[in-house]
Each structure stands twice: as structure tokens, then as C-alpha cells.
Image (cartoon, rainbow, N blue to C red; front, side):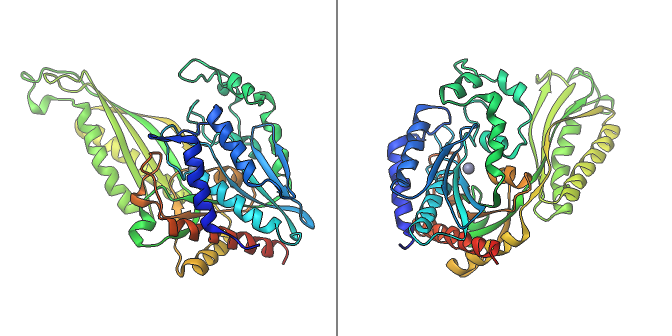
Length: 412
Ligand SMILES: [Zn+2]
């Protein structure tokens, strides 16, 4: 049977009817609506010769046995943020289900093909993203913190998991699922404006950005706004302000997609009649190349020490969080690029700003690649999230081609 990309679009609309409301998608993980969505997804694959399994972390697997046990995985997540979009995560698994159906209706494939619906990619209820994929990839190392997490109603994460049949203490046993994995493929909406601005429907993803997140505290001296001459001031905000502008220059200098954001500054005492004594500034820096990311950070720190001296204030840096860049597999990037070119005539390779389940799988050493399809206005995590229907259909065709190419590569 042939692939039917248009069916994927109508199935996605059906899912939105079933699990969304006037404010958007409501498929938050570990809720009844999520369960409804998971059961609906399983229904798409009924009647096919597939093995079904829910692993120890709550991930759902559909397996089509091939001549060889090595497996090509197609993944995504059906969970959403509250008031989310109809495509983020859902496109991946619904398109994956269509590809798996197409293969299952033909002759036994030379390698095993599996679809995975990762549990709780968004972390919307408890603030911990990539739950199921980090458990399966073995990178989940924060079980003690997870035990303490509570949602807004005071329900603990272990209790919410238990209600869905997941025992947090056993979640890491999901690692066995990746033992036979030979490649991991994921289609996703871009969630950014790059492909739209280039007039392209699809792109091959190079990897996910590394991130450095820091809290920078500038300390000066509170002083009366009327009685303190300008040359006697120790103004903490002056340091933060200089740095907020300097990081633009630094990003431009390092280049190759570097992005730096000063996401906020909290000033104290924060009144109109006083010089600012402390300014607490948030900084987020991202790059696909590890040494360029280090360069962004070094340059910002060096500039801050210079500004502290110029303003006669002090500066202190505290790391909030960081993650290294994750580069996808070169061969698979090449196959993804080919697949995109074949279905849409032209291709583009781009990095991903957001993290995805694919990053966790890649970190576990499994050759991984993603496809991006254009997002209208670059919007996501809102009911305004959208993609043209013809682009959605092309993306399903590209995922199908990429899957066939990957199977051929593994059996070459
Ligand atoms: Zn997503």
C-alpha cells in the first residue's frame, strides 16, 4: 500500500478535535487527556502485525519485526504544553505511524522498524522535560530531585507517574529498549522562523545547540539620586546595561548562528530616587559548536570584568545550567538532506535551538537525525502554531524516504 500523507493531516485534525479546546492542545503528560491521545495513537496502528509495549518509563513502542534485529526507530511525543499547538510532537508520531503502516503492509523489512511515543517530552506539569527519552537513553541522573517535584495542585511526580503505571525507581530500565537501536529519526516542526524566511518547506537538522545559562550579579552602592555627583556613583545597573549591549557584538563576532540573550535584570533597591546597588542579570548563550560556545562565554566574562572596573563595581558569575552541543550523525544528515531534496526540490541544513528527544537518543551514541518542516511565523507552544498543509504532506513524504534510505544504508 502507498503512503498517504493527506491522511496524516486529517488524523492530526481529528486528534486536535479529540484532545484540544478553544485555547489549543491540552495533551499534558500524566493526565487523562494524554491517555486519551495515547490510546487514539494506538488505534491508528490497529490491525497491523506489530508488537506493542509500554516500557518502564511510560514510553509506548510499536515494533515491526524485520529479517534483522537491528532497529530503525522513528520517534516523537504526543504530549503537549497546556494551550499548546496541534503539531508540536504530534506530527512526529502521527507521521511515523503512517510510515510504519506503509512498511508493515509490504514485505517483511530487512531490519526491524519501531515507532516510539516518548513520555513527557514537554515537562509541562512538573518542569522536567525529556522524561521518557532521558530514561531510555540512560542520561536521567536526577531521580532524587524528581522525587521532590510537585505540580501546581501539590501532587508529587512519583504519585502522578504511579497513576499512569510508572514506577520512578524502575524508569531507567527503559534503557533496554535502545539496545537494538541502529538509527533514530524524528520529524518535527521547526518552531522558529528560519525555513519560512528562506521560503523552504523542509530542512535537515545538524544537531541541537549547546547552552550556557548564567546568573550575573553586579554589586555597587545605593546612593541618593539627588546628592550623589555622577562621578562618585557605583551604579550596578551600568554594568548590566553595558553587558546587555556587548553580548550582541560578541554574538556577531563569533557568528555561525551564535545567539546571546540577556533575559532579564532585577535591580535593587529599584526605586526612582536611588542609584542601583545590585543588578541581577540573566544570560543565555547558545551555539552548535562547543569551542564557539566557550568563546561566547569567555568573551562575555572578560567584558564584564572590564565593565566592573570602569564602573567601580563588582561582578559575580553563577552557572544556572549548561548542556553541550549535540551533533547528529553525518551519514544520516546526508540521507535527510537527500530525502528533503527529493520531495521538495531543494534543501537546507540548520541547527535546532530547542532541545528534542532526538538529542537524548543521540547522546546515548545512536546515529540520529531530525527533519524540520516550516513553522508559520515561527510560532510554537501556542494555539497559533501552524504549518501549511502542503508542507505537512511533504514532511510525511520526506520522513518516509528518509526511513527507506536509512534501512538501505543499514543493509548495504
Ligand atoms: Zn516537540
